[in-house]
Length: 424
Image (cartoon, rainbow, N blue to C red; front, side, top):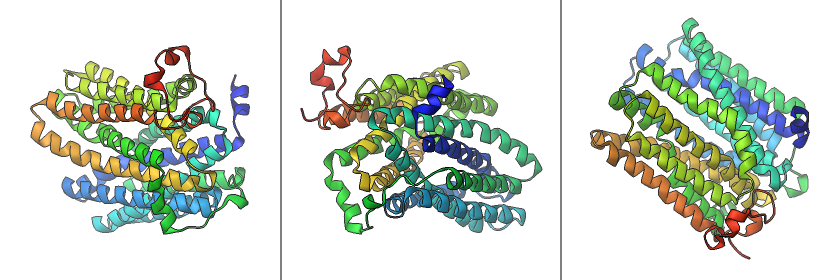
């Protein structure tokens, strides 16, 4: 079974699987403890810490655009190697700054730089997967990559807890090592996937003109609404669970562990099953699960009920994420695939920046009214679910099938007026 799975994909998919695992592990070793270091060791107020992370998110948004453009003009491999090498230098600098207890402003600037460089990597990585995987296998392939990322995220914080007992400086040194290891994996074991004849030239007008692709632009706007809702997990949900429901910080850690383990265990088989349906159907169903999961938080009265909510939310994540990346790959011309990946990553970054801001205000004013608080967040997800169903009527069928051709299960054929997608 394992041997057959290994042969199913181009070797570059497996190298990216390993590279994304190592990169995610390194990143998650340091990041959960950075805010703790700023607050406890340097005495920085939490509102200032939040501002630093917001600026960092903005730099990631810019980096995704640059990464997408460079991957189309310079090639995927070169962009990934360069970004990881430069990011390693940035993390070495952060390690030194922590060691000498540099002012928080200098450390914050280093974080912004490292976030920017890390985001340059992402569109090139996603574009390479689309380059080497046929359309009918993309949902499964992107699901496989997500397994690697989440496995790294599950392991990283545990290692970070050990390193933090030694010194905070070692956290960033380990992250730098993982960034270098990622660059080496790609440099030694991958070949360029973008053909020279398909490389384009960078032009601002071409980047701006992407809004003329109505299907892609509509997909991005609908996804933006959903990203605002999904980003509540690490901010609003965490604070609400401890402050309002009354679970402990240890239980909160277990809650997020539930999310990571579910993705690792169920993402790939779930992605294999979802291939049978249209991609917009998968995304709509994923958004609906998000809506149900977040609304159920309003009814939570303890740790077990929050676990149930997290299970439903994670099922939404497992359903939506690989389908969304497949949709970007299917809608993008091969010569502009990096650009499309970059724009979608930008939309995700903007949504994840707006999410904690919106959720924070909602939590401040609706803290005593959980039905209204989570009802608003749930409505955002529900609205995006409706949007994806609407989008399914516009996108051509050959681009909206996870199997790479028009294959509709019998259940879908009975309600084609609802599920049908695009031109006939």
